[in-house]
Length: 284
Image 1 (cartoon, rainbow, N blue to C red):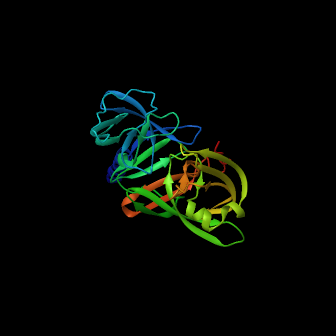
Image 2: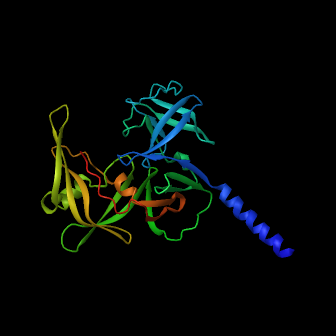
Image 3: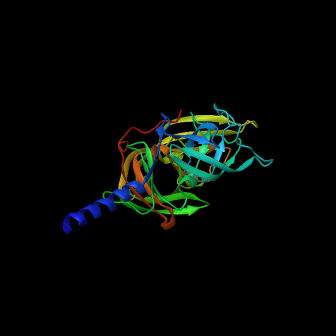
């Protein structure tokens, strides 16, 4: 009898732990962006792109859905908004106005959905999972993250020629559809234009007719922890404009792993997703 009671007690604890987890469904676009269907202020149905490089939300000037119930002040900021996703509810969400976002999205939403929580990006099952405590990490590899203004950075090793590794820090950037994108400083310092095999390029001009050339190159090896990507497709800018101040770890690389983030301890845990060996995304 005592054994039955003990088993029942343990089962109840396990059930309560499972119930404590919360999930947020999402869909992936062909541009590798994550779209979350939300209801803002109980009135406005918006498709928001998840942007891991920001905390708050924003609206796009090119949105397809109306957002008449998000009221902005003269500084184009709106505070104290609510968000519903399924049965989950958040309040005091800040929105910024007139910020561009990814394809198929009316705006962006950031990591404020997971404030003071541990969260998983599960690309295999198209969902976020929110935890109160660190979950089972069997099969996951720890990766140190750096926090700067609520954005996440990771360290990666880049083998450009020979076997010499060049370490760089990358901003996790889920809004950028491509994979690795280097800052102007890194690209120039390591002479990527001369040392990498160039697989494509695109020239843009601004209103002052200044040129910005986006080049795609083939990196012999890129390492994240113990994971190694051979002949990785990487991007960098050349030309008169020097505007890329940060290197990105973009959505095409993010999707290749399942991620668990513990921001308070500045740690992430990763394991390969179903996209791990997919062909690299090509920037058109």
